[in-house]
Amino acid sequence: MNRFRRHAILLLMTVWIAGWQCSFAQEPIKPSANQKQLPLVVMLIAEREYQTEKTLPQFAAEHLDDDYRVKFVYADDDDPNRLIGIEAVVDADVLLVSVRRRTLPTEQLDLIRSYVADGKPVVGIRTASHAFSLRNQDPPDGYDAWPSFDQDVFGGNYSNHYSNDIKAVISASTLKAGDNQSDSSMIGEQLSSLNRHQEPFVSGGSLYQVVPLLSGSTVLLSGKIEGHPSEPVAWTFQRKDGGRSFYTSLGHVDDFRGESLPKWLHAAIDWAVAN
View 1 (cartoon, rainbow, N blue to C red):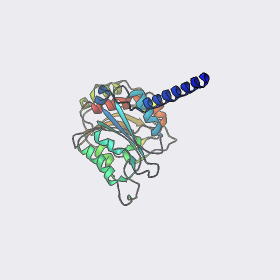
View 2 (view 1 turned 180 degrees about the vertical axis):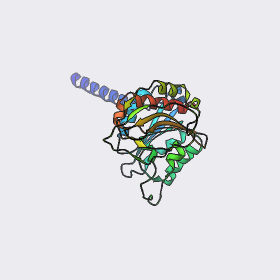
View 3 (view 1 turned 135 degrees about the vertical axis):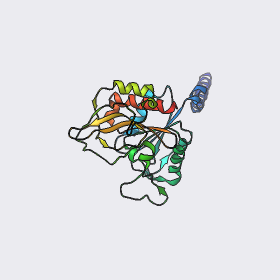
View 4 (view 1 turned 30 degrees about the vertical axis):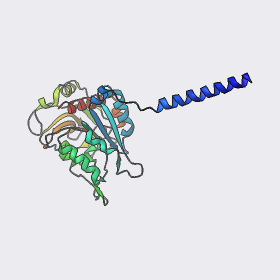
């Protein structure tokens, strides 16, 4: 009888401890006051070419976690033109766009339009130059396009790209005021320093054709293919709404494996939020 009682007591204690641990594990972890004060970077990820659904979270974990809060907004698996959790854009301090040819529900695209119109900073990589429009096709009913997003937000002029088999050499551009270049003092010391110390490297992806850029742009990196004119690869842009943007056509998975793109992207986010 005593032996049975001991087993019963042990069983009850085990059940109680397990229940207590389960309750403890489900207790929500509240962000600290310091974490709440960190700037919020919202990353829109909706493309199938460059695996940024993997490379951007890894980049954020390695380079942003100490200084920023980061939220990821992905395309709906059942409807690739709908972004799940896009409401986070309302509270974003920096919006990073990695989207390729998606026409969003009108109310979702309006959130992005409103964010930009408020003069808030935008960072774009690779396919962000053709993020919200289809090629020679109208959006379906209830969905909307923004064909001029590249010009309006990045001052860009994406038209095509060179063959994937031809690799471009990327190097620093000479900062100057004039033509399509804005005052180089507007880009800040961190981006200026990267520009001064950048060594040439080979891009992982094809070279985008983006000239001419709009007035208000400052080209930081250029790409060159032998026998062809150079193309801007990274630049800042002072928008008409008062906001500022950074764009780079880098973003291939091999670019993230290299040293240059993570440095530039980190510096661009710092520059964007510093205003």
